[in-house]
Figure 1 (cartoon, rainbow, N blue to C red):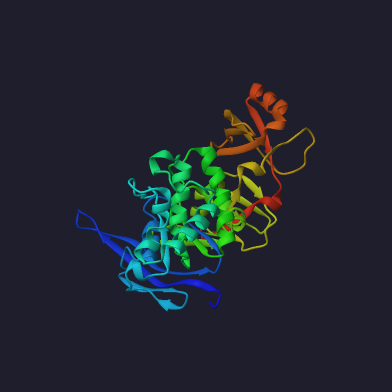
Figure 2: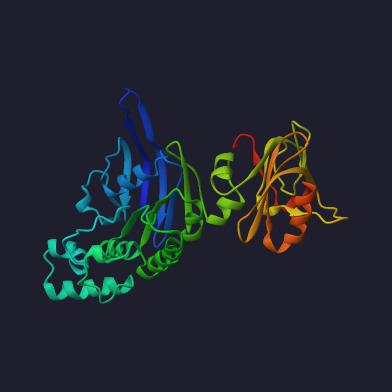
Length: 360
């Protein structure tokens, strides 16, 4: 692709275990990363996302396949000869150096003259909101500020690609959410591609232009955050990204019927036969008297208040577990069903997503 900054062709990597077995980390992956794109690699531990990031940075050698960056073959090039910088999870700042010295270290090693180095350090620190802090030591900074120094150090050399290996994982929740927006804004200002590794679904959906969901060394789905969430291509993606209610059964084109007799109406034109219907918890609503929308009757097991919503956990008459999210503004209705321990959960058939059996 002409608009790609990175291209992986059949990238494969396996590791030997102490028990003498072999674990496939990358299973012949093909991937194109667009210019000026924020791409997130998302998946559980052991899915291959960190190996993929390390292969791009040159820290892991592929068993087979190719890595091209801006049209040049980088497969066998060492890390220092790739137009790539990495922000690590632990920031890896030099404790004996000041913020300015940490930020400009790569320029010093490259022999950049001091006046130019000072100018570019000040520019990089301004971009990450640390202007005027050149003289501080890392121990005098908060976790969020240290993370910004690591970013400034990574962008000062003006790489074509920035790799970020779970750089927000050590931050508290509020700071982490603030940094998510700042990172996306910074990426847009720099105009370079970011490849971000995380196992946090919300983080991936918040920050990314596209998300690659990995499992077993393969990309299960590569798409926009909305498409990943609303139209997962298989059951793994449906369950890993967000909460889900999955109903396996047979569809006649308008209704899917499960083995235990539950009928799920849907409006999705698609294949008939074996399929899985997905209903997200927030797509349910408490049916008032006279509601004609399709619904499920459940016996409530637990109601959990989480601030903006109530999470309802219940089971159908056949024992199937169902999860629903009800806005906190409907607290009076939630109070009523808490007393009766019964709920009628209605849904819009247009919101139901059908996954063909071969994909599920």
